[in-house]
Length: 405
Ligand SMILES: Cc1cc2nc3c(=O)[nH]c(=O)nc-3n(C[C@H](O)[C@H](O)[C@H](O)COP(=O)(O)OP(=O)(O)OC[C@H]3O[C@@H](n4cnc5c(N)ncnc54)[C@H](O)[C@@H]3O)c2cc1C
Image 1 (spheres, rainbow, N blue to C red):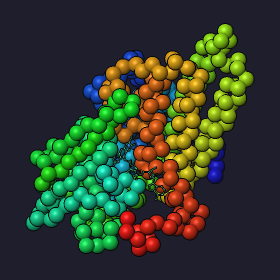
Image 2 (image 1 turned 135 degrees about the vertical axis):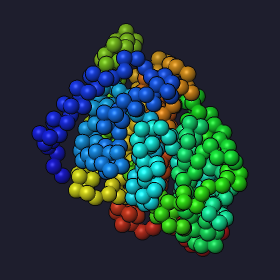
Image 3 (image 1 turned 135 degrees about the horizontal axis):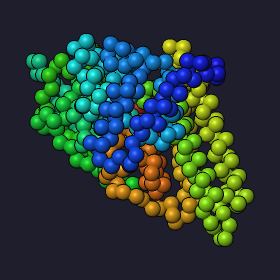
Image 4 (image 1 turned 120 degrees about the horizontal axis):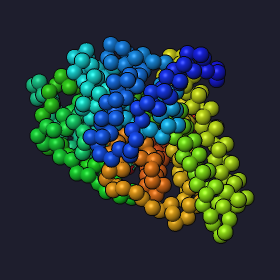
Protein backbone atom coordinates (compact mmCIF):
# COMPACT_ATOMS: atom_id res chain seq x y z
CA UNK A 1 0.00 0.00 0.00
CA UNK A 2 1.52 3.32 -1.10
CA UNK A 3 0.21 6.22 0.97
CA UNK A 4 2.03 9.02 -0.87
CA UNK A 5 0.03 11.21 -3.22
CA UNK A 6 1.48 11.77 -6.69
CA UNK A 7 1.95 15.22 -8.27
CA UNK A 8 -1.01 14.33 -10.54
CA UNK A 9 -3.13 13.76 -7.40
CA UNK A 10 -1.98 17.08 -5.91
CA UNK A 11 -2.88 18.93 -9.13
CA UNK A 12 -6.31 17.31 -9.18
CA UNK A 13 -6.91 18.22 -5.52
CA UNK A 14 -6.03 21.86 -6.27
CA UNK A 15 -8.38 21.83 -9.29
CA UNK A 16 -11.27 20.51 -7.14
CA UNK A 17 -10.57 23.07 -4.38
CA UNK A 18 -10.57 25.94 -6.87
CA UNK A 19 -13.78 24.72 -8.48
CA UNK A 20 -15.54 24.38 -5.13
CA UNK A 21 -14.37 27.83 -4.06
CA UNK A 22 -15.84 29.36 -7.21
CA UNK A 23 -19.07 27.33 -7.31
CA UNK A 24 -20.11 26.44 -3.76
CA UNK A 25 -23.75 27.50 -3.13
CA UNK A 26 -23.94 30.52 -0.81
CA UNK A 27 -27.05 29.24 1.01
CA UNK A 28 -28.42 25.98 2.39
CA UNK A 29 -30.11 23.93 -0.35
CA UNK A 30 -33.62 23.26 0.86
CA UNK A 31 -35.70 21.78 -1.91
CA UNK A 32 -35.10 18.74 -4.06
CA UNK A 33 -35.11 21.02 -7.13
CA UNK A 34 -32.24 23.06 -5.64
CA UNK A 35 -30.29 19.91 -4.84
CA UNK A 36 -30.86 18.56 -8.31
CA UNK A 37 -29.62 21.86 -9.80
CA UNK A 38 -26.41 21.61 -7.68
CA UNK A 39 -26.01 17.99 -8.84
CA UNK A 40 -26.33 19.18 -12.44
CA UNK A 41 -23.50 21.66 -11.86
CA UNK A 42 -21.26 18.90 -10.46
CA UNK A 43 -22.19 16.70 -13.41
CA UNK A 44 -21.39 19.36 -15.99
CA UNK A 45 -18.01 19.92 -14.32
CA UNK A 46 -17.28 16.16 -14.71
CA UNK A 47 -17.43 15.29 -10.99
CA UNK A 48 -20.33 12.79 -11.12
CA UNK A 49 -19.74 9.11 -11.98
CA UNK A 50 -16.04 9.93 -12.26
CA UNK A 51 -14.98 6.26 -12.32
CA UNK A 52 -17.41 5.26 -15.06
CA UNK A 53 -16.06 4.56 -18.56
CA UNK A 54 -15.79 7.63 -20.82
CA UNK A 55 -18.17 6.09 -23.38
CA UNK A 56 -20.95 6.09 -20.78
CA UNK A 57 -20.40 9.67 -19.63
CA UNK A 58 -17.77 9.12 -16.91
CA UNK A 59 -14.10 10.13 -17.03
CA UNK A 60 -12.39 6.80 -16.23
CA UNK A 61 -10.95 8.50 -13.14
CA UNK A 62 -8.70 6.48 -10.85
CA UNK A 63 -10.15 5.44 -7.46
CA UNK A 64 -7.69 7.85 -5.79
CA UNK A 65 -9.08 10.79 -7.79
CA UNK A 66 -12.63 9.82 -6.82
CA UNK A 67 -11.56 9.62 -3.17
CA UNK A 68 -9.87 13.04 -3.40
CA UNK A 69 -13.06 14.54 -4.78
CA UNK A 70 -15.16 12.96 -1.97
CA UNK A 71 -12.67 14.26 0.60
CA UNK A 72 -12.65 17.82 -0.75
CA UNK A 73 -16.45 17.90 -0.95
CA UNK A 74 -16.71 16.92 2.72
CA UNK A 75 -13.87 19.30 3.73
CA UNK A 76 -15.70 22.21 2.09
CA UNK A 77 -18.94 21.11 3.80
CA UNK A 78 -20.45 21.13 0.30
CA UNK A 79 -23.77 19.41 -0.35
CA UNK A 80 -23.52 16.10 -2.16
CA UNK A 81 -25.24 15.39 -5.43
CA UNK A 82 -28.54 13.49 -5.56
CA UNK A 83 -29.32 10.03 -7.02
CA UNK A 84 -26.95 8.25 -4.62
CA UNK A 85 -28.37 4.77 -5.28
CA UNK A 86 -28.50 5.33 -9.03
CA UNK A 87 -24.81 6.20 -9.00
CA UNK A 88 -23.46 3.74 -6.42
CA UNK A 89 -25.61 0.72 -7.22
CA UNK A 90 -27.66 0.84 -10.42
CA UNK A 91 -25.00 2.39 -12.69
CA UNK A 92 -22.25 -0.14 -11.78
CA UNK A 93 -24.81 -2.99 -12.10
CA UNK A 94 -25.74 -1.92 -15.62
CA UNK A 95 -22.13 -1.27 -16.64
CA UNK A 96 -21.17 -4.83 -15.57
CA UNK A 97 -24.30 -6.79 -16.46
CA UNK A 98 -26.59 -4.63 -18.66
CA UNK A 99 -27.19 -4.92 -22.41
CA UNK A 100 -25.83 -2.17 -24.68
CA UNK A 101 -29.43 -0.91 -25.16
CA UNK A 102 -29.91 -0.67 -21.37
CA UNK A 103 -26.63 1.22 -21.01
CA UNK A 104 -27.56 3.68 -23.75
CA UNK A 105 -31.09 4.12 -22.39
CA UNK A 106 -30.30 4.62 -18.69
CA UNK A 107 -26.71 5.53 -17.79
CA UNK A 108 -26.54 9.14 -18.95
CA UNK A 109 -29.86 9.97 -17.24
CA UNK A 110 -28.54 8.49 -13.97
CA UNK A 111 -25.45 10.71 -14.16
CA UNK A 112 -27.42 13.87 -14.89
CA UNK A 113 -30.09 12.95 -12.26
CA UNK A 114 -32.72 13.40 -14.92
CA UNK A 115 -34.05 10.05 -13.65
CA UNK A 116 -33.85 9.19 -9.94
CA UNK A 117 -33.46 5.55 -8.85
CA UNK A 118 -34.26 3.42 -5.82
CA UNK A 119 -33.22 -0.05 -4.65
CA UNK A 120 -36.10 -2.54 -4.33
CA UNK A 121 -34.46 -5.42 -2.43
CA UNK A 122 -35.75 -5.72 1.18
CA UNK A 123 -39.18 -7.13 2.03
CA UNK A 124 -41.14 -7.38 5.31
CA UNK A 125 -39.72 -10.88 5.96
CA UNK A 126 -36.53 -10.69 3.89
CA UNK A 127 -33.85 -8.29 5.05
CA UNK A 128 -30.69 -10.01 6.29
CA UNK A 129 -31.94 -13.23 4.69
CA UNK A 130 -32.57 -11.43 1.40
CA UNK A 131 -32.58 -14.60 -0.69
CA UNK A 132 -35.90 -15.61 0.92
CA UNK A 133 -37.69 -12.75 -0.90
CA UNK A 134 -41.19 -13.48 -2.22
CA UNK A 135 -42.11 -10.71 -4.67
CA UNK A 136 -42.99 -12.63 -7.84
CA UNK A 137 -42.20 -11.83 -11.48
CA UNK A 138 -44.06 -14.12 -13.86
CA UNK A 139 -43.16 -14.08 -17.55
CA UNK A 140 -46.11 -13.49 -19.90
CA UNK A 141 -44.86 -13.40 -23.53
CA UNK A 142 -42.65 -10.35 -23.78
CA UNK A 143 -43.55 -8.97 -20.34
CA UNK A 144 -43.09 -9.75 -16.65
CA UNK A 145 -46.08 -9.37 -14.32
CA UNK A 146 -44.94 -8.27 -10.88
CA UNK A 147 -46.84 -8.84 -7.62
CA UNK A 148 -45.59 -8.36 -4.06
CA UNK A 149 -44.26 -5.87 -1.54
CA UNK A 150 -40.95 -4.19 -0.72
CA UNK A 151 -40.11 -2.15 2.40
CA UNK A 152 -37.48 0.36 3.65
CA UNK A 153 -37.10 1.60 0.07
CA UNK A 154 -35.08 4.83 0.39
CA UNK A 155 -36.24 7.67 -1.83
CA UNK A 156 -38.98 5.63 -3.58
CA UNK A 157 -41.30 8.65 -3.33
CA UNK A 158 -38.90 10.70 -5.53
CA UNK A 159 -37.85 7.89 -7.84
CA UNK A 160 -38.58 7.36 -11.53
CA UNK A 161 -37.03 3.88 -11.71
CA UNK A 162 -36.21 1.02 -9.34
CA UNK A 163 -33.74 -1.89 -9.40
CA UNK A 164 -35.94 -4.83 -8.35
CA UNK A 165 -35.03 -8.30 -7.09
CA UNK A 166 -37.96 -10.68 -7.71
CA UNK A 167 -38.52 -14.45 -7.62
CA UNK A 168 -38.79 -15.88 -11.11
CA UNK A 169 -38.46 -19.59 -10.23
CA UNK A 170 -40.22 -20.56 -6.99
CA UNK A 171 -39.20 -24.23 -7.40
CA UNK A 172 -35.43 -23.59 -7.50
CA UNK A 173 -33.27 -23.36 -4.32
CA UNK A 174 -33.79 -19.87 -2.93
CA UNK A 175 -30.56 -18.26 -4.24
CA UNK A 176 -31.09 -19.64 -7.75
CA UNK A 177 -34.62 -18.48 -8.59
CA UNK A 178 -34.18 -14.69 -8.33
CA UNK A 179 -33.93 -12.17 -11.19
CA UNK A 180 -32.90 -8.53 -11.37
CA UNK A 181 -35.39 -6.30 -13.22
CA UNK A 182 -35.59 -2.56 -13.97
CA UNK A 183 -39.02 -1.22 -13.06
CA UNK A 184 -40.71 2.07 -13.96
CA UNK A 185 -41.93 3.54 -10.65
CA UNK A 186 -44.68 5.46 -12.49
CA UNK A 187 -46.16 2.28 -14.05
CA UNK A 188 -49.81 1.42 -13.20
CA UNK A 189 -49.98 -0.86 -10.14
CA UNK A 190 -46.94 0.62 -8.29
CA UNK A 191 -47.98 2.19 -4.97
CA UNK A 192 -45.51 4.02 -2.70
CA UNK A 193 -46.37 4.67 0.97
CA UNK A 194 -43.84 6.77 2.94
CA UNK A 195 -42.87 5.62 6.47
CA UNK A 196 -42.12 8.08 9.30
CA UNK A 197 -38.72 7.63 10.98
CA UNK A 198 -37.34 8.51 14.44
CA UNK A 199 -35.64 11.57 12.88
CA UNK A 200 -39.07 12.87 11.83
CA UNK A 201 -38.18 12.42 8.15
CA UNK A 202 -39.79 10.00 5.71
CA UNK A 203 -36.67 8.82 3.97
CA UNK A 204 -37.88 5.32 3.21
CA UNK A 205 -41.14 3.74 2.08
CA UNK A 206 -43.28 0.67 1.60
CA UNK A 207 -43.74 -0.16 -2.09
CA UNK A 208 -46.58 -2.39 -3.34
CA UNK A 209 -46.78 -4.06 -6.77
CA UNK A 210 -50.20 -5.07 -8.02
CA UNK A 211 -50.05 -6.75 -11.46
CA UNK A 212 -47.38 -4.35 -12.71
CA UNK A 213 -46.43 -5.07 -16.33
CA UNK A 214 -42.73 -4.68 -17.19
CA UNK A 215 -41.20 -5.29 -20.66
CA UNK A 216 -39.03 -8.45 -20.66
CA UNK A 217 -36.14 -6.39 -22.10
CA UNK A 218 -35.86 -4.79 -18.62
CA UNK A 219 -34.32 -8.01 -17.26
CA UNK A 220 -30.69 -7.40 -16.22
CA UNK A 221 -28.33 -10.28 -17.11
CA UNK A 222 -29.76 -13.79 -17.39
CA UNK A 223 -33.05 -15.06 -15.93
CA UNK A 224 -32.59 -16.48 -12.40
CA UNK A 225 -29.05 -15.12 -11.84
CA UNK A 226 -30.23 -11.96 -10.02
CA UNK A 227 -28.69 -13.08 -6.73
CA UNK A 228 -25.16 -13.22 -8.14
CA UNK A 229 -25.67 -9.82 -9.79
CA UNK A 230 -26.83 -8.30 -6.49
CA UNK A 231 -23.77 -9.70 -4.69
CA UNK A 232 -21.25 -8.09 -7.03
CA UNK A 233 -22.81 -4.66 -6.66
CA UNK A 234 -23.54 -4.74 -2.89
CA UNK A 235 -19.80 -4.74 -2.15
CA UNK A 236 -19.56 -1.36 -3.93
CA UNK A 237 -22.42 0.00 -1.80
CA UNK A 238 -20.55 -1.13 1.33
CA UNK A 239 -16.96 -0.22 0.58
CA UNK A 240 -16.44 2.06 -2.39
CA UNK A 241 -16.80 5.49 -0.79
CA UNK A 242 -15.22 5.08 2.62
CA UNK A 243 -12.64 7.86 2.25
CA UNK A 244 -15.38 10.44 1.65
CA UNK A 245 -17.01 9.23 4.86
CA UNK A 246 -13.70 9.65 6.73
CA UNK A 247 -13.66 13.27 5.59
CA UNK A 248 -17.27 13.68 6.76
CA UNK A 249 -16.40 12.28 10.19
CA UNK A 250 -13.34 14.59 10.33
CA UNK A 251 -15.40 17.64 9.35
CA UNK A 252 -18.01 16.77 11.98
CA UNK A 253 -15.34 16.27 14.63
CA UNK A 254 -13.67 19.59 13.74
CA UNK A 255 -17.01 21.37 14.18
CA UNK A 256 -17.52 19.57 17.50
CA UNK A 257 -14.05 20.71 18.67
CA UNK A 258 -14.93 24.30 17.76
CA UNK A 259 -18.21 24.07 19.67
CA UNK A 260 -16.46 22.49 22.70
CA UNK A 261 -14.16 25.53 22.82
CA UNK A 262 -17.14 27.93 22.90
CA UNK A 263 -19.78 26.10 24.90
CA UNK A 264 -19.75 26.79 28.66
CA UNK A 265 -20.83 24.05 31.08
CA UNK A 266 -20.79 24.57 34.89
CA UNK A 267 -18.85 27.79 34.45
CA UNK A 268 -16.08 26.23 32.29
CA UNK A 269 -15.56 25.68 28.58
CA UNK A 270 -16.59 22.11 27.67
CA UNK A 271 -13.07 21.49 26.30
CA UNK A 272 -11.54 22.22 29.74
CA UNK A 273 -13.06 19.07 31.19
CA UNK A 274 -10.28 16.40 31.14
CA UNK A 275 -12.71 13.52 30.53
CA UNK A 276 -14.25 15.34 27.53
CA UNK A 277 -10.74 16.03 26.16
CA UNK A 278 -9.82 12.38 26.57
CA UNK A 279 -12.95 11.25 24.69
CA UNK A 280 -12.34 13.76 21.88
CA UNK A 281 -8.72 12.58 21.58
CA UNK A 282 -9.84 8.98 21.35
CA UNK A 283 -12.33 9.93 18.64
CA UNK A 284 -9.61 11.70 16.63
CA UNK A 285 -7.51 8.52 16.84
CA UNK A 286 -10.47 6.38 15.72
CA UNK A 287 -11.08 8.55 12.66
CA UNK A 288 -7.38 8.15 11.75
CA UNK A 289 -7.70 4.35 12.03
CA UNK A 290 -10.71 4.52 9.70
CA UNK A 291 -8.66 6.63 7.27
CA UNK A 292 -5.94 3.96 7.02
CA UNK A 293 -8.55 1.21 6.62
CA UNK A 294 -10.07 3.18 3.75
CA UNK A 295 -6.68 3.69 2.10
CA UNK A 296 -6.27 -0.08 2.20
CA UNK A 297 -9.51 -0.54 0.22
CA UNK A 298 -8.44 2.25 -2.08
CA UNK A 299 -5.14 0.59 -2.88
CA UNK A 300 -7.04 -2.62 -3.78
CA UNK A 301 -9.23 -0.61 -6.14
CA UNK A 302 -6.16 1.18 -7.59
CA UNK A 303 -4.75 -2.25 -8.52
CA UNK A 304 -7.96 -3.00 -10.43
CA UNK A 305 -9.32 -5.41 -7.77
CA UNK A 306 -12.94 -5.33 -6.53
CA UNK A 307 -13.66 -4.15 -2.98
CA UNK A 308 -14.57 -7.78 -2.06
CA UNK A 309 -15.77 -9.05 1.35
CA UNK A 310 -13.18 -6.77 3.04
CA UNK A 311 -15.58 -3.89 2.39
CA UNK A 312 -17.64 -5.35 5.28
CA UNK A 313 -14.81 -4.35 7.66
CA UNK A 314 -15.11 -0.73 6.49
CA UNK A 315 -18.93 -0.80 6.69
CA UNK A 316 -18.86 -2.21 10.24
CA UNK A 317 -16.26 0.34 11.34
CA UNK A 318 -17.68 3.54 9.80
CA UNK A 319 -21.28 2.85 10.87
CA UNK A 320 -20.40 2.02 14.50
CA UNK A 321 -17.92 4.91 14.66
CA UNK A 322 -20.67 7.23 13.40
CA UNK A 323 -22.89 6.22 16.32
CA UNK A 324 -20.09 6.67 18.87
CA UNK A 325 -19.33 10.12 17.46
CA UNK A 326 -23.00 11.17 17.54
CA UNK A 327 -23.34 9.97 21.14
CA UNK A 328 -20.24 11.93 22.20
CA UNK A 329 -21.62 14.98 20.40
CA UNK A 330 -24.89 14.89 22.31
CA UNK A 331 -23.04 14.26 25.57
CA UNK A 332 -20.99 17.44 25.01
CA UNK A 333 -23.83 19.59 23.71
CA UNK A 334 -26.35 18.57 26.35
CA UNK A 335 -29.86 19.92 25.70
CA UNK A 336 -28.61 22.03 22.75
CA UNK A 337 -27.96 18.80 20.87
CA UNK A 338 -31.66 18.13 20.59
CA UNK A 339 -32.38 21.19 18.45
CA UNK A 340 -33.38 20.26 14.90
CA UNK A 341 -33.37 22.99 12.27
CA UNK A 342 -35.63 22.92 9.25
CA UNK A 343 -38.50 20.61 8.39
CA UNK A 344 -37.51 16.93 8.77
CA UNK A 345 -38.99 16.03 5.40
CA UNK A 346 -36.69 18.54 3.73
CA UNK A 347 -33.68 17.19 5.64
CA UNK A 348 -33.85 13.77 4.00
CA UNK A 349 -34.28 14.72 0.39
CA UNK A 350 -31.16 12.94 -0.73
CA UNK A 351 -32.00 9.30 -1.45
CA UNK A 352 -28.97 7.17 -0.72
CA UNK A 353 -27.27 9.74 1.46
CA UNK A 354 -25.70 8.02 4.44
CA UNK A 355 -26.22 10.56 7.18
CA UNK A 356 -28.83 13.03 5.96
CA UNK A 357 -27.77 16.67 5.98
CA UNK A 358 -25.00 17.60 8.39
CA UNK A 359 -26.48 20.95 9.53
CA UNK A 360 -28.40 19.70 12.55
CA UNK A 361 -26.84 17.69 15.39
CA UNK A 362 -30.18 16.33 16.65
CA UNK A 363 -31.15 15.04 13.23
CA UNK A 364 -27.73 13.41 12.69
CA UNK A 365 -27.95 11.66 16.07
CA UNK A 366 -31.39 10.20 15.30
CA UNK A 367 -30.29 9.31 11.75
CA UNK A 368 -27.18 7.47 12.93
CA UNK A 369 -29.35 4.68 14.43
CA UNK A 370 -29.90 3.52 10.84
CA UNK A 371 -26.19 3.29 9.99
CA UNK A 372 -25.71 -0.18 11.51
CA UNK A 373 -28.86 -1.54 9.81
CA UNK A 374 -28.89 -0.13 6.25
CA UNK A 375 -26.76 -1.91 3.59
CA UNK A 376 -26.56 -4.98 5.89
CA UNK A 377 -26.60 -5.00 9.73
CA UNK A 378 -23.47 -5.13 11.90
CA UNK A 379 -24.20 -8.77 12.79
CA UNK A 380 -24.33 -9.68 9.09
CA UNK A 381 -21.07 -7.81 8.41
CA UNK A 382 -19.47 -9.80 11.25
CA UNK A 383 -20.72 -13.06 9.71
CA UNK A 384 -19.24 -12.05 6.35
CA UNK A 385 -15.91 -11.08 7.93
CA UNK A 386 -15.81 -14.33 9.93
CA UNK A 387 -16.70 -16.64 7.06
CA UNK A 388 -15.30 -14.94 3.97
CA UNK A 389 -12.34 -12.89 5.24
CA UNK A 390 -11.08 -14.96 8.20
CA UNK A 391 -12.20 -18.33 6.77
CA UNK A 392 -13.98 -19.40 10.00
CA UNK A 393 -16.61 -22.17 9.88
CA UNK A 394 -20.05 -21.13 8.63
CA UNK A 395 -22.67 -20.16 11.24
CA UNK A 396 -25.04 -22.97 12.23
CA UNK A 397 -28.38 -21.73 10.97
CA UNK A 398 -31.64 -23.60 11.35
CA UNK A 399 -32.16 -23.87 7.58
CA UNK A 400 -28.64 -25.27 7.10
CA UNK A 401 -29.35 -27.89 9.78
CA UNK A 402 -32.53 -28.90 7.91
CA UNK A 403 -34.81 -27.58 10.69
CA UNK A 404 -38.14 -25.78 10.22
CA UNK A 405 -37.85 -22.00 10.65
C1 LIG B 1 -32.13 3.93 6.63
C2 LIG B 1 -32.34 2.65 5.89
C3 LIG B 1 -32.43 2.68 4.52
C4 LIG B 1 -32.67 1.49 3.82
N1 LIG B 1 -32.80 1.57 2.47
C5 LIG B 1 -33.08 0.44 1.77
C6 LIG B 1 -33.30 0.52 0.37
O1 LIG B 1 -33.24 1.60 -0.23
N2 LIG B 1 -33.62 -0.60 -0.29
C7 LIG B 1 -33.69 -1.83 0.34
O2 LIG B 1 -33.94 -2.81 -0.34
N3 LIG B 1 -33.50 -1.93 1.68
C8 LIG B 1 -33.20 -0.82 2.41
N4 LIG B 1 -33.01 -0.90 3.77
C9 LIG B 1 -33.23 -2.19 4.44
C10 LIG B 1 -32.01 -2.87 5.01
O3 LIG B 1 -31.21 -3.42 3.99
C11 LIG B 1 -32.51 -3.92 6.01
O4 LIG B 1 -33.16 -3.24 7.07
C12 LIG B 1 -31.39 -4.77 6.55
O5 LIG B 1 -30.86 -5.59 5.55
C13 LIG B 1 -31.85 -5.63 7.75
O6 LIG B 1 -32.99 -6.36 7.44
P1 LIG B 1 -34.29 -6.33 8.38
O7 LIG B 1 -34.61 -4.90 8.70
O8 LIG B 1 -35.33 -7.16 7.76
O9 LIG B 1 -33.82 -6.98 9.75
P2 LIG B 1 -33.69 -8.55 10.05
O10 LIG B 1 -32.98 -9.22 8.94
O11 LIG B 1 -35.04 -9.06 10.43
O12 LIG B 1 -32.75 -8.54 11.32
C14 LIG B 1 -33.22 -8.32 12.66
C15 LIG B 1 -32.05 -8.50 13.62
O13 LIG B 1 -31.56 -9.86 13.57
C16 LIG B 1 -30.17 -9.90 13.27
N5 LIG B 1 -29.86 -11.04 12.40
C17 LIG B 1 -30.55 -11.43 11.29
N6 LIG B 1 -29.95 -12.51 10.73
C18 LIG B 1 -28.87 -12.80 11.49
C19 LIG B 1 -27.84 -13.79 11.41
N7 LIG B 1 -27.82 -14.71 10.44
N8 LIG B 1 -26.85 -13.78 12.35
C20 LIG B 1 -26.86 -12.83 13.35
N9 LIG B 1 -27.82 -11.88 13.48
C21 LIG B 1 -28.79 -11.85 12.56
C22 LIG B 1 -29.90 -8.58 12.52
O14 LIG B 1 -28.54 -8.20 12.62
C23 LIG B 1 -30.84 -7.62 13.26
O15 LIG B 1 -30.23 -7.16 14.44
C24 LIG B 1 -32.78 0.25 4.51
C25 LIG B 1 -32.66 0.23 5.91
C26 LIG B 1 -32.45 1.41 6.60
C27 LIG B 1 -32.34 1.35 8.10
